[in-house]
Image (cartoon, rainbow, N blue to C red; front, side, top):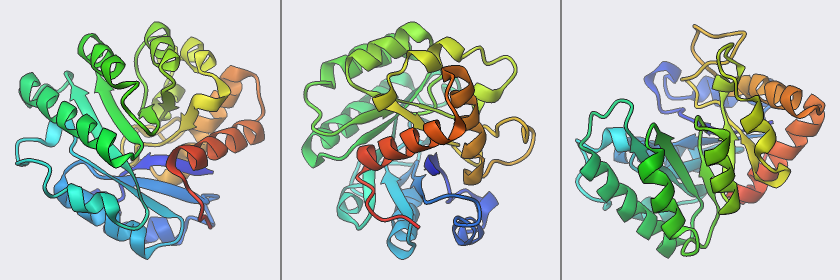
Length: 254
């Protein structure tokens, strides 16, 4: 299995050493640890450089912009070993703790950076489809690497709009929640654009909801996707892992 999106820099993991040490035991061949500000991006890049099967994404999350001043801290990291994506970047109108104008400013700055550096892009999009969709439509032909809608939470109609643009759709543990009602969305995504993630330590899937999340719990997201698509666990595990390798350019695994 490959967890395409987790946060090993969260204090809960105390440096992430135990998660990394137990990857093989947990059935993980690789994971991508994702930065959300300059400090965590630096740490993600370090973890990737020092550990087999660990890859990193670097970027400025829309809810973490109050303590950021430009992209200077992110730029050098994009050339670091095993930094495979720019992200997560985007808009978040749920918490709305950063002015929307500033969120849009940094999203556009980082999309321009993505066009120049040629790295895949990880998009955080929460309760902002009216602004996000037209922005990403305007960049779809400019980007030279793939883009993923991380932890997708919008409608089937919005998913289909992103699929038309060739964007990947990634599902997290939220699809296992009893009130999720995401079957139509899960079935709407073509095989070649489907990814699975945990967003650990957040969004813990059933049957561990209420606890902290771990990258190994991507298994439960894969199980739910398989159930909704009428496939076996092994089929969806292979599919999402192959897609992850292609999306991120992953060549080294455990």
